[in-house]
Length: 443
Image 1 (tube, rainbow, N blue to C red):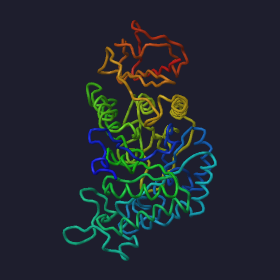
Image 2 (spheres, helix red, strand yellow):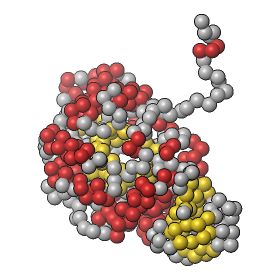
Image 3 (cartoon, rainbow, N blue to C red):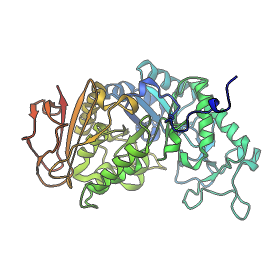
């Protein structure tokens, strides 16, 4: 018989914080967000399916579909409403097609070795969701006893569910399982995940995994969501840091140093963070990628790939979209070949080929390389037993002539974008143009 003491782990022995297993196919994935309404002129799954070979050629792996459900009509915003105002969790928005169209899209994606995750809105429903009449006790109430939108926000087209009710949790979990079982969905992006109790998400992950391995993305930035529920969380503060730097709202790179220090020290190695220069929220409400990053846009995109994190592409970026897409109306993307698309394709190729740039435990930790222009130039190494990358990015509007300290970065390289060979040692000086970048791949 074991003693009581032997049943408990050694309190001084480190225990793994993240206990979930990421799908193996996510190790070097890029994620792509599809706003179905604006993705094509037709705004349908059938039309979007025609783009799948192009997305495969671009190199992305995970396709995130914004909410696919019927949209509420009561208190609707605009003509077509927000897809985040869900009228029926078991429905398909007829604006996009029907269930068979969705299944066809998913099947075609799977044939191309692409994975599809659905945007899931657990926190709230539309005012005219049938649950308001069938189960009015499932909803949160304001001080007057009325249904309430999420407090302190202008989300007037939705009302909050009450997750202190076990029946709400059971209903929502079964609804999510339905889409995995019925449509072979590969996971979910959870809207405002932090507004919903973490133990709900922990159980959702357990139940979904009884059907198939899934990938879970949380629209939130919190370590606790990584332990048992989510593979990846948003790197909102990475976005904020790079935005401030490229927009001249800070005199140096300290916001980025703070982010990377926090990310390495507070978040477990077996976690993923999503880095991005645009998404549906930023594009609709804060501005285009050009407005938000200016001349530093390409530098920011490069860092989103060669630094730690899984890069996101919001549909239309690869076409150089320079418009704030309407959110509640039809406003289709104008597709074209564009240098930004070429840059994304090159970076995805680099990330997949170079294991030092992979995600979570598969990739290498960024190690800062001190330089003589630290207020403007970010330099770091990522390396493992197979690969080594030395990245240097000038986040300023002035040419920088940079020398580097220490020796981690020494070696023989090929600069990825110019394909020029270069040996870097203690005497090396690098001249880098305004907002320029160099990505040296070890030989």
